[in-house]
Amino acid sequence: MTRKKILISNDDSIHSKGIEALISIAKQFGDVLVVAPHAPRSGMSNAITVELPIRLKKIEESPHITRYSCTGTPVDCVKLAFDQLLEKSPDLILSGINHGSNSSVSVHYSGTMGAAVEGCIHNVPSIGFSLCDHSPNADFEPMLPFAKKIIENVLENGLPTGTCLNVNAPKGKPTGIEICRQGNGRWVEEFDKRTDPQKRDYYWITGFYQNLDNGSNDTDNHFLEEQKISIVPVKIDMTDYECLQNMKNWIF
Amino acid sequence: MTRKKILISNDDSIHSKGIEALISIAKQFGDVLVVAPHAPRSGMSNAITVELPIRLKKIEESPHITRYSCTGTPVDCVKLAFDQLLEKSPDLILSGINHGSNSSVSVHYSGTMGAAVEGCIHNVPSIGFSLCDHSPNADFEPMLPFAKKIIENVLENGLPTGTCLNVNAPKGKPTGIEICRQGNGRWVEEFDKRTDPQKRDYYWITGFYQNLDNGSNDTDNHFLEEQKISIVPVKIDMTDYECLQNMKNWIF
Image (cartoon, rainbow over all chains, first blue to last red; front, side, top):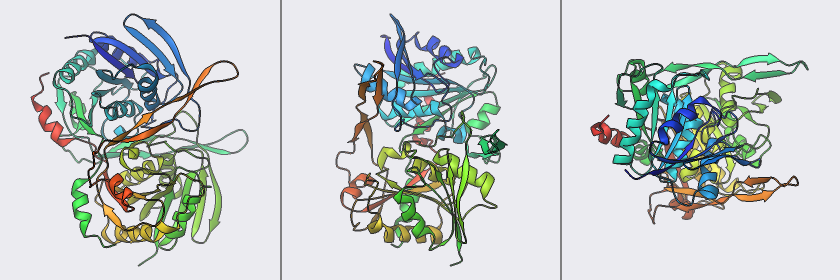
């Protein structure tokens, strides 16, 4: 296989253990450009930075890997790479490996998936990788052979225009890979209300995930519970075509 | 019709003209709770605030309308309303009216649609409204009778679980309403690179929209060009089911 050009980003910052794990796999396939947030930007979704200027700083240049840290969001990182750093489209965009799950509805909040969705919008095969372990010292080793196989398949088979992959791995040794649908659920927030020294209230976001799938056996969350790696193909086109047809009889 | 409880947010801030226009319509249907960003948060997508505490400030309480300004994102506003301010789920969640289009792929970056998607995840009928005019003094009047009809239809017909609406209105007087699909396109960024007084580079995001639909006559962008209001039903489940089936023959 000819050496590929691979763009990598994430949302846990360029200093995270997860991005190092992803780079270690990616460099087996080709030359790597890393553009990632200089500090953690979890929960940034597909956000772009409109109100503030963005800074970009080269922190490594070696024969097969170049790294930039960026003050913007994960999506800003991908957009800046395309506009300022890449001479032509890369062959592949990888995001992660995220410290923590991005399964089910978390795809909407995830900065990791924000970068993958942005890569897909730029018409490059894109994969977001996450490990169901929030720890800064999470062990990524057990999932790496599976991540490599997934990348090989994407390079071999390609992905449909407008579709990227949301890959989640269970903590510990995975027992297989399952292609599946996005689980149905929501985060139930329980904001932690506190009072600052000036006697003013403030809130920290906190909460728990509520599974709304009632035992379905075809979702990412189901397979993760079974110690499998889940792959959900994610569409950029969010149109609900069934609803579109049903709404034709609305009266305006 | 019994009076409804309606939650309103946006991304242009609680001080924008667009949110006032939306409140003026919503209060015809019932009691309104407004929780909106204290400052502009355009491009915030479905982002949540993880790294900073969030502040919430009541700025109006009258018999039929209560307003809070919030330092968080549009999604934080909706989440805080559910966890801290509402006794039970509202009947409807409205977001906007955004100063500027959120058609096509902009649904992914839009804080306006972030709030609507969040409402939908909370299983409440939710609508994001946008006007194709970025001006702070944009004229929302011509679209208001149409917005009212759309709200009436949603209250009457409901929306499927997991689907919300992305409504965009052309500048000027609309000539009708079309239910349609999300147009296919992307933003091509041209970052504006500058140098600060300390001789360090920084970037402002800027760019233009590239339509990739080649004259399709069934997209939101198409109907907006025809001076119609576009309604795209937007799904929370982003799974590409066709791709899911096709990937079953991948070899791992």
